[in-house]
Image 1 (tube, rainbow, N blue to C red):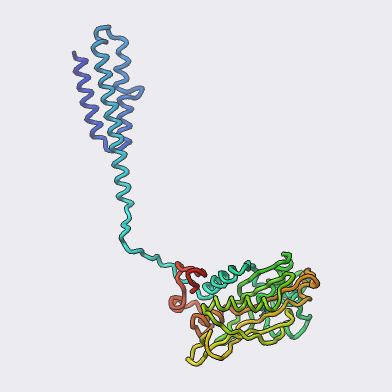
Image 2 (image 1 turned 90 degrees about the vertical axis):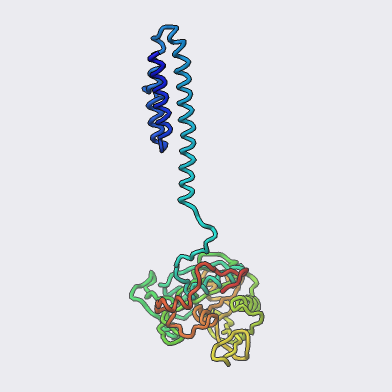
Amino acid sequence: MTATTDLETLERDLLARVGAANDEAALEALRVEALGKQGSISALMKNLGSMSPEARKEFGPKLNGLKDRVTEAIVVKKATLAEAALDAQLKAEAVDVTLPPVKPRLGTIHPVSQVMEELAQIFGEMGFSVEEGPDIETDFNNFTALNFPPKHPARETHDTFFMDARDERGDRKVLRTHTSPVQVRTMLKQKPPIRMICMGRTFRKDSDATHTPMFHQIEGLVIDETSTMADLKSVLIAAIKAYFEVDDVKLRFRPHHFPFTEPSAEVDVGCDRSGGQIKIGAGDDWLEILGSGMVHPNVLANCGIDPEKYQGYAFGMGIDRLAMLKYGMNDLRAFFDGDTRWLKHYGFSPYLLPGLAQGLG
Ligand code: PHE
């Protein structure tokens, strides 16, 4: 009977320890200790073989009962511990959904970036893709391909920053004076139909309240077999209305000269200056906002496009000027001072990206 008493003691001990195990690792160690190959219960099982038939008959079922009860206790305890661990994890990761949202401080979007997003939206809706070009350009892309005659004074009127570095033709590189070289880049790499805009930095030696040596332009170019000045007008009217979010806008096309367009037009937008601030879409004053025209046949030919077959229009606008007009800033120089107080005041929330559906600004 000693063996039976020992069994009871063993069972009591094991069950107590299962009850006391407070994590899954301790429980597993206990399972191995009792039921593993070298375990205490397994050792007793092995002993059965050497017992007399009578002893085995009495001891065998008891040992099996013990094994079953200990196994079950471990399984149940394991489930309890897993549930408790999950509860603790859920509690630790709890989120109070009734709290107001806390906006992390991300700074603000610069008005120029905001306006670029707005313009990409507007022209994107009209089927324009977005192209890019570098700030440092070749003389060919910035001037020659655009039909500026060599050594012509027109090159000087841009107040160009020439660099010491030279391009593969031996000409001095330039900080691009306008985004029009991206017209050239696009035509050289893409066959018509072309319908693109490009936005980016441009540079001229100029500095006052409305001019900074670095400023931003948006360029537009459409080349196909049929586009005319009338298409140019309708696209610009639609874009200006969408940008200023006004239903009615007056545009005035004035004859002008650019080497790379023929005919060329400068475009003024109708405005009101009576209140000290310029208001777009009202009044009977005019403000010049862009240059445009039909792409000159020489430019098409310079870019490997047959001017007998293809035609199109181009336009260029100052982005900073557009931002100042829409958002009421009157000194361009402040745009690039990097003063965080200015940015806080005039910047836009990074959470509200412009889209035509929800409004632009
Ligand atoms: N590149 C011209 C400028 O900077 C603007 C322009 C672009 C004019 C395209 C006509 C066509 O003044």
